[in-house]
Amino acid sequence: AQSVTQLDSQVPVFEEAPVELRCNYSSSVSVYLFWYVQYPNQGLQLLLKYLSGSTLVESINGFEAEFNKSQTSFHLRKPSVHISDTAEYFCAVTYTQGGSEKLVFGKGTKLTVNP
Amino acid sequence: DAGVIQSPRHEVTEMGQEVTLRCKPISGHNSLFWYRQTMMRGLELLIYFNNNVPIDDSGMPEDRFSAKMPNASFSTLKIQPSEPRDSAVYFCASSLVRGRSSYNEQFFGPGTRLTVL
Image (tube, rainbow over all chains, first blue to last red; front, side):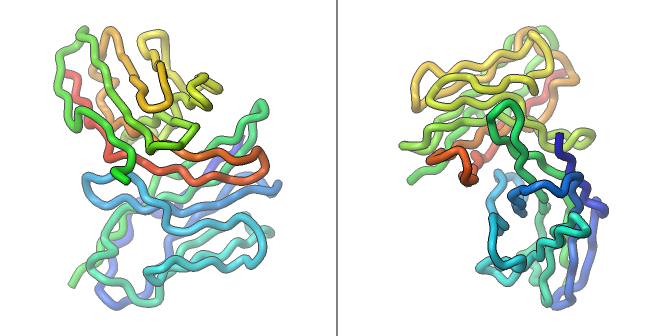
């Protein structure tokens, strides 16, 4: 089975600073990769995804992630964060077991953007 | 679209009581997922349904947990009897599965925060 490791449980940064949230997964077989964001007291929302093609994917609010197959990583980056980016971010990967496709999530990284 | 609807949003109960969590998926979606989120274990898939049929319940922790999907617009997750270690946030998600080879985005509800005293 797949596993996802998010190396940092908490990341505090100042507003307008760059940020990188790290994600590694356990297998190098073909996978789909995702970042979800969870704002306080809300459910998870899809932020961006890698299915195939270009290894650099972007979201509408300035985040980007790069799929690195050799390092089995899918780190999330943003060059300049806003207070409103404060949330918990989850990396996820699909895997297929018994003919069905499932999502496995990392334990999350809490991003806190301070003024 | 109203999105995935879950009720109640918060539930506080005493150990030994039966708890029922409810979910209404997005209209037209054919897959439904129940997840549990805790500080210790993160987000875990409990069970998922496709076309109202349970496909994989390997994540259901024990026999005290059961889930049903009587129709395409409603699902329940029941815990009987409840225990303090069941305290968590339970999320329901739905998706429209179009083919086996393509990933289909899951849309999450706001969750039910369960506290078992």
